[in-house]
Image (cartoon, rainbow, N blue to C red; front, side, top):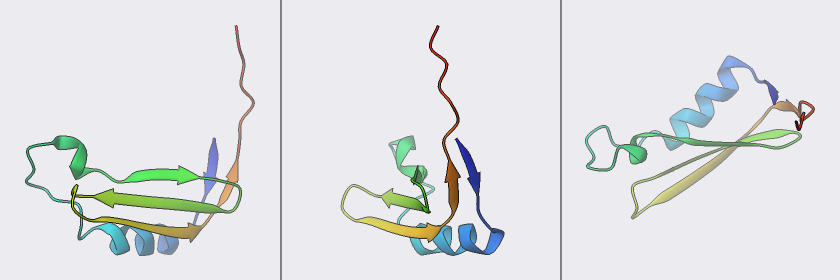
Amino acid sequence: MNLAITKEQILNGLQAVQNIVSTRTTLPILSNVLLRADGKSLQLTATDLDVTITCAVEATVKALPVIVR
């Protein structure tokens, strides 16, 4: 996958979900942000298992060809 996004757009998305991500958690996976991309947007999701927040920002996403051997 090839993703093209401006620095401002990615920062806006991360700032929108950063308050949910905890640096002190017993489950390390909760210290991360899930990124999902489709044709024209990048979706950022964060959770603390009580609250989940999702934000979408504009991006250009191109799928790379899959080679199966």
